[in-house]
Figure 1 (cartoon, rainbow over the protein chains, first blue to last red):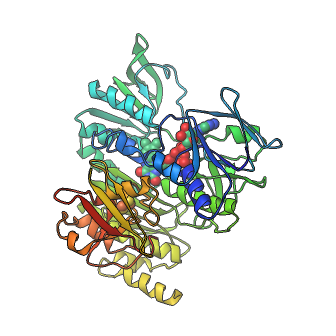
Figure 2: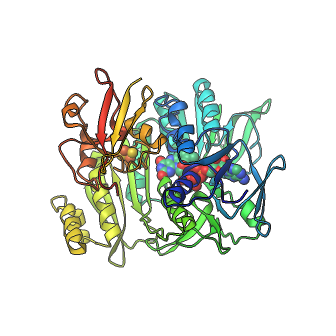
Figure 3: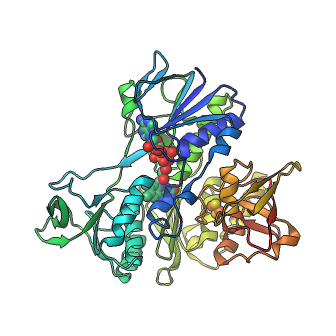
Length: 412
Length: 107
Ligand SMILES: Cc1cc2nc3c(=O)[nH]c(=O)nc-3n(C[C@H](O)[C@H](O)[C@H](O)COP(=O)(O)OP(=O)(O)OC[C@H]3O[C@@H](n4cnc5c(N)ncnc54)[C@H](O)[C@@H]3O)c2cc1C
Ligand code: FES
């Protein structure tokens, strides 16, 4: 068999197949994935799914009729173990092999493991897949004292869900504030306050040195200062690692993910990668980045899908992300990175505000809290390269949308 | 089983069954309906699930909440009085088929 083979059937893999098909790619398309589930939505796993607001079945994003309609073969429950670029062949566990003309690697990322004593105890969880979420949800029901290792997005979302379920929750974060790499101190402080008010105990500047347990079941975490915190369930959320081993061993260049250009193409022609497993130069961030977001997976996969079909439509969207914790809707556009100025719009105390980040006078990112309309306006501004002056951004009476409309007219 | 009929701008249409508790957006995405992206999966983050609900049916649906209205003010296609975000729509009795029109663009 020839045609397009895709490894990974999640946001990136499925989107690339769909785009390639819709753009006229007429050869066979096969997607292989090691999970047994039809493609499903990951973001709700830490949010509505844990809260029992959405069932497993309603997480499903694409079903058989979709794949039949688009003439895409979906091979579930098979792991790709070996990639041979010269023979243009992917080997699946169990020795079955698939030949390809073009290949897209969309293997995503996995949860980084914690390497301390007791890390293999029962009761220590990671959250990446729906199977992880089903296990976590079941055990959460009987747990009373939860420790979350890591104050990043997944950790904080699970903390919020567990607190809502009435659990005693402790978050242990190594740095001096929450979400340090993603948001500004204003937002970190706001989130800290939100969690503390919900009864969550947040420990900053603190690390886990080991887990204590009996009968190989976790009973406490031991902190760097020697103290210990009781836990009958631990969720570790200390970041993600690209699943790039298969690419690496085939000789593709990987530096924190598979290195690709604006068409999702690796340095080897006809070999593409997209999503959490890929590292690209992002012109809005002015740097090489490996992003972990639905938007990045889908938009990068679209560019790859077009290139596979022979049309060129480079990936150049502004990075976007969202996170829901309690009734806080946090939305992010751009990557603040090394910003040199910020402007806060609205009142932080009201829980409805935005933070505008500037680098050398240019607007590079905007975080909004419970202001979805403002977030949409900000996305347009950044995409169009329009920067309101920081004073304008901070002035709630200044109409940001007027700049967008003016920009639309200028561009029309 | 309730149904949704998606009408494209060229007049072509497709009617599909929608499972219980499933949003119109998810039904569209699962069936690969062209022109409904639903990028955020219904988290009210993206506004790429915009549709025009049949004008006569629009009033029989639960009205948009504040958050949906805020996002509707920022949709990429033309906003009309019957504009809705399909991730917030479910086909509820007494309707047994909801008719929605797909806008010119989502982003
Ligand atoms: C709990 C949680 C909450 C999140 N919340 C948000 C959010 O609110 N907003 C947001 O934008 N993003 C969120 N994300 C991130 C988002 O889900 C990811 O960025 C997105 O899933 C990336 O898609 P992908 O297709 O690149 O990879 P993945 O979704 O990771 O899919 C890769 C697939 O490939 C499979 N695979 C890997 N290796 C092989 C192999 N060798 N052979 C066969 N199959 C293989 C994997 O099992 C997996 O099924 C969240 C993630 C998690 C885990
Ligand atoms: S799917 Fe994103 S707002 Fe409806």
